[in-house]
Image (cartoon, rainbow, N blue to C red; front, top):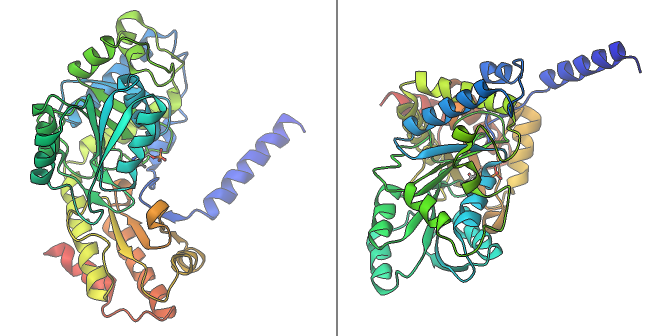
Length: 397
Ligand SMILES: *Cc1c(COP(=O)(O)O)cnc(C)c1O
């Protein structure tokens, strides 16, 4: 095939993709703004050798730090959100270390795997998945046993949509001498996060949730205490790619442990800039989440959670007699809207509407609720209210 024919083929593929574009109202990845997509096509340099890229990378990391209200160093890692979680555990865990894994959700529990893969001993603190962690109960537990090197907790556990009070949990852990690792992949930029005030040692974020860039990047903010713990290890970190220490002097040395994905980072930076100029960002998330809950409840649907709703996602129980796939398939085939079911212990039980980041706008959410109402009615679940109408009225409250 000639190069010219090949280029035509690529353009046709793109045109076809644009025609069948779905509205992805899922809890990540979310819809990506045009300026973010375009940034990923900027002319690139050699990010290993061009010192200007080190400045750009550092400036982007510093902006993240500012938005997360922390003086800690931020590092952007070349991997999906999961890489940040694994890197935190890989870098801190030594053979036999006891690690407190706070488990009130699927991602919360999932940390136990990372801890044990790297030789640690995960101790699960498992509580009700329908509500946030109760800080007083956790305190009682810690009074009996607080011999942990670090603890893991999820800020907002996306499968259930529960929002944990990390601003209370992490200072409590820290007062017992326990380092804290927080998965805020969905939490940050959808709900408030004050990393320093919350005394969080390692906080993990991802590109494809509220930040609204495509999937592919993770970032972490690492405290001095966490860095020291890594440096004082008796044994080496059992990973190269997931070793956070290798980033410590990247800027001074002008050396990254691996070649940085420059185009992804250009996109990430634009996504971050979009949030910085959007001063109403968190308030809008709160309003939209509130109005979605009101609409679903008015229609007679049951929310999965009893308390502690994140602003990023709303999770409701699949109505009796229906299957999640019936609802999801109809939404997609008849309305071109993608919602998400769930996995693990929640597989088949709930439906999730992702209204974070670029999805957090009245037009997309109201048209999603309109479609959902029609789909449910057609499937035999008679909605007790017009969800779109309740949503639009509640948003004004
Ligand atoms: C999305 C998400 C992650 C990252 O998972 P990926 O599979 O890399 O997308 C981690 N934690 C939480 C709470 C998430 O919502």
